[in-house]
Image: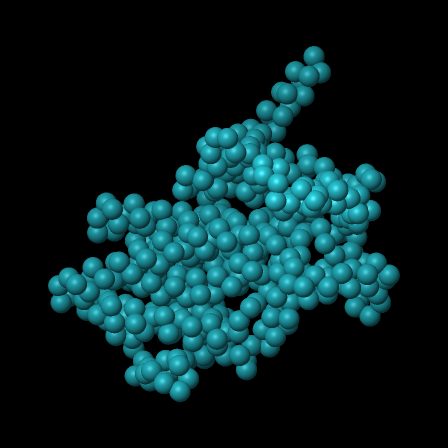
Length: 114
Length: 335
């Protein structure tokens, strides 16, 4: 996989912009854990001057109705993502490997607890 | 960077020349749209699609932000502590909706600061509905019931818009809008069941908001040249007139529950069509307001500009603090 400039690669994974217009405040990606036992999920992005403000801003923006018990913020520029132009080559490997799924094995049909 | 490169190419060569990667991109884009799949930020997309989305999403964001003003106007004068708390929550939601949408627009390569500049310089447009004044408390009811009701009609189909970040922002927004519509309905219901004076206030407010709310769906289909392209791109799912009809069909029975009337003598059930008929709207007024000559355009923009300028020292201080924190971290690592 070729190395892509971070800003361009970022948007494959998140909703982050390839910001062509420079903003005064950097962009952050927000991840929210909705309850204990679940993963933090990407909720969206926001602009904030620093990490602490980003967390507070994220609380006001993404958890006004009990949506979360924990928040992560990550500078958008820190995310490295796979190259969208290499989509097929990069993700093709599982094709033709149906035997990796339980549904491939049909002869045991009707046998209990299997 | 992918987006920058393709944008530069497009502007440098105009529309007539197509590179190999563009035609491959266009083919892939057409394939995704035909399959009703979503387009994501890093995907190749036609320049016109990107521009249309930037315009639509940023206007939508500006509308949410400006939309805080007509209601913010009543926070200090809400008739009870409960109503004040509700109104504050609602205005906070509008700010949130604006920010979700600005983020969605940013994924297309337009900066937040530039969008703010375009709004306060008067270059960008926003929904004409927010250029009407809110002289009575009943207007808080009408805005929730009619304005947010119309917005929901418009926005529910946008949850399936072909551009992923826009659709995702709309899902979040629609969840929150239903509280807005219900609280507005309740304000009107309480007024309508109150004294004769309160009921008259509710009726007078509905009379003023009915037509502007219907015009929120945009001009009639025949005068909406961009609609067909937006529908072909799966950004828009229903035409302006279809959505307007759906809204009228919803609010006529709701007005009956409220015990209020809608100020349109042409409203009657049409058995044959299976819809309510309604009268013509004053589109000259719509275009006047859109062009900035509505009753409150100047006040809204001035207030927004003032707020932005008054907040400049906060933004500067926060940026300076962040820079100093950053510098001290670098210093500690170095030593």
